[in-house]
Amino acid sequence: MGSGMASSLIEAGAIPAEQIIAADIDEARRKAMQELGVATSDGASEVVSDAATILLAIKPQVLDEVLADIAGRVGDRLVITIAAGVPIARYEAMLGKRTSIVRVMPSILCTVGEAASAYCANAACSSEQVARVAELLNAVGTAVAVREELMDAVTGLSGSGPAFVAVFVEALIDGGVAAGLSRDQAARLAAQTVLGTGRWLQESGCSPSALKDMVTSPAGTTIAGIKALEEGGLRAAVIEAVVAAAKRSRELGS
Image 1 (tube, rainbow, N blue to C red):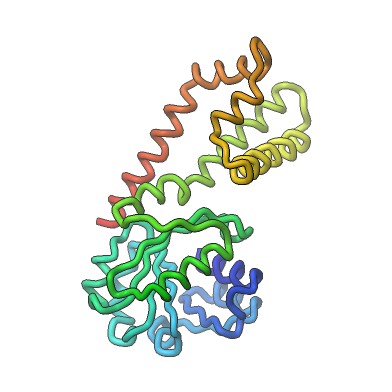
Image 2: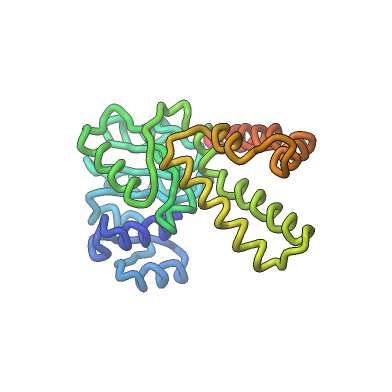
């Protein structure tokens, strides 16, 4: 996720590659970053010493180890973290409450400049720092500010959501094949259908139900399909998927 955000920010012109330093213990990942024109290191503490803003793109399971390594070097730098489920209080406990910390939940879609992200900041952050984070996130998609207690819900919805949508698209493709299309034809049509639906909802400002009603005619093909979706429990299954992912996010944070 860290390399994906870095490459997207560079491509969007939000941050020049020469202003980024990446740390990773994996040599292959360092080489991938070097191909972007980014300087690299195998040690987090060395990178922190040279950085004005720190992006922690690490797994919650190794967070404490990394925080312990950089704790004495953070100073007044802005810390942005994308570790799922980890509350700001956990960072403050190791870095200090005076450290400016912004918790972010992006998604893999940042790699194509279409991420749906959310963020929240601690009391130490200035309005300029929060605005800068929002600017960076909006450069690779759409970002919204939320209260921290809602970050697990964001993780369940837009953090895990691309996988849920991918499962739905896969099912659309299989349905198209079952109805007689080639897999390539079905894949192209399904992907564009989802892309177009999202764009229509964003640009029109209308609700999903409004679009559904526009497409659905009395006794037509669409209502027959919607009836099958409802009988199959699609709506309830999607709701439960988001709730389950949010619950797991809370578990990871604890």
